[in-house]
Length: 259
Image: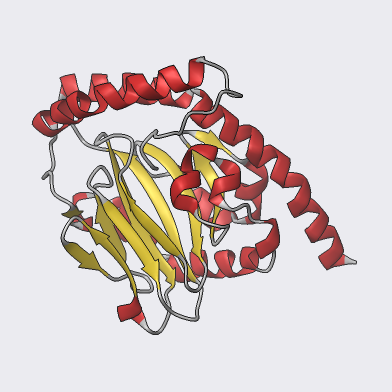
């Protein structure tokens, strides 16, 4: 998830910009503590072997991919990220990055979990899960340079539908460029600056999983407190409401499909 960076908007309540500014001021200090307390390496790209659960989901990647393909039939009912989270407007572009949430910051989306039962069941078994969703990037889409909210989370991508022209569909984390592969994991620390481009004529679909970083007791306690605050902030609560609004669109398309 992107840094809580927002332009001035006098129509918004005062509380939101103050929360964002406070988060920005504290982020570097929090990340420093996460670095010192981390039980795994602190680096832009990480090994999937640090997280044993990746093997289980990887074994079921084709089933997960089939569920994602079924959902993609209702592409226009899958909300662009910018419509779910206004705080992501700077990086979410013109709607060419869509997200089908199963779980976001610990909140389940029951209707979506029912639409992807295998994926949802597997995701719910992941220790210290924060979020799980299908991330859908349209042909030609670009996500500009940005960084995540906190080093207390680790982001894991499972390739489900990767363009054949893999060299032109990539993510760059700091100075490392990586390419997705079907059934393969890409694990990284999104508190480092990163950008994404899909310079192909095909859609890219991944399962995006975010988990808490394994840390020693002080770091884990701080991380839980930070995530508790984010979970209850307008950053997440507005996104939940926006997802609820989009549910009616999905249901209508499903009815039209059955008719």
